[in-house]
Image 1 (cartoon, rainbow, N blue to C red):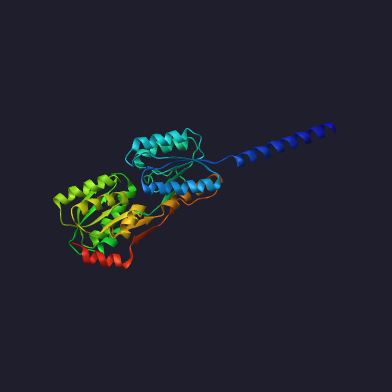
Image 2 (cartoon, rainbow, N blue to C red):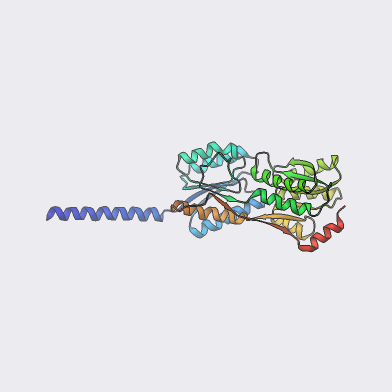
Length: 314
């Protein structure tokens, strides 16, 4: 009898320990490290805001990092190494240079830290991530290219402004726009990188106008670059249809003012929000789709904008 009683007590203690351990694990705050391409541009600030709002709502500890510019590749990779050293549960990452990021993501794998990619994916050969959340960038480029082609005629010359070489998000947008523009008989006079920077978009456009002053339209892979390009066009006294991607605040104001024709809006706030939601699901052991499309929408200032441009294009 005494032996049975002792065994019962041991079993109760063991059950209590297991229960308490499980409760502690459930109550432990989820820790997510998020490294974006930068935190200095409006686009990435919106991604970060979506993530922070979702983290605050769910009680997730969010470590949010990003270098000062999108071309600070080494600094971004060092930031990933830094958050991996902080015992995070999930890594959310937007690689500026996917090919250069393979090794650091292998370190995440070695630490058993699941990876969620946002906005920009990894090379097709790399599959050690849970899910990719982002826009179909080729489709976004096609939408921008079609809007531009609809305003122009066969033989017109256009300038395409890309991001950094090796940045698949921007590269794919330009690829999609080029595909549609060429099919419409539009001439690609120049295709230049501006590294997702407003001042570089300005300089690229200035340089192109010196050799090709008869540019009839501009498509840029993001709004920072198209806004820089717009300033160069305005200084040159030229009014041509110009389209960017992101629909950030400055771009929307410019569209409403009748300066930019339009921008392809991405669901960047939703990218950040969904990244945190999926991080929670990952740790809960839920099955998650490998690819989640956050969508894109062409934004223009209604029919009047189209009419104004057709009447004012030089």
